[in-house]
Image (tube, rainbow, N blue to C red; front, side):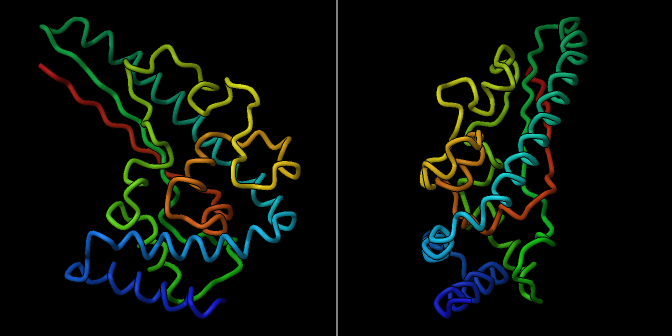
Length: 208
C-alpha cells in the first residue's frame, strides 16, 4: 500500500474515532485518499473489469428489490391514507453499502473495518449521507418513474462510465448510482467494487 495512503487512512480513522477531532474539512482527507488510490487503480482498469461488472450487477439487483418493496408498501399504505382526514404521506427509500468491510477486498487487516466505518460516515463522506443515490426514491414524487429511469438507464447511451476507459467499458451498462459513488462521493473505485451486500432503509412520514 502507498505510504501516503497509509498516513491518510490512519488520520481518517483517528478523526472518526474521536469526535473532538471532527472538522469541517475532514472530507478533504477522504477526497485526497480517493484521488491517490484512483490514479493507481485506473491504470489497471482491465484487471478490475470483472469486479466492476459484478458490483454493478449486485447494486442493480439491490436497487430493484428496494424499488419494488417501496412501491409495494406505498400501494398498501395509500389506501389507508385515502381514508384519513386530510393526511398526506411521503415515503423515502435509500440504499447503502453494507456496513461490514467487503470480504472480497484484497487488502485485509485489523484496521479495515474502522476505516470502512469512517468512509461510510455521513459527516466525513457527506454526499453519502442518503445512500448511493443523489436523489432518494421518494413517493409520491417519483411514483410514475420507471425503474430504468431511477437507475438512469432511460437515456442514450445507457452507460454511466464517465471517468473510466470509454472503450473498455462501453458495453457495461453502468447505472447512475455506480457513477454517483465513483464520481461524486469520497469512495475510491477499489473501495466499493468488492461490495456484494447492501442495506436499504424505507421511511414513511405522515403529515397531518
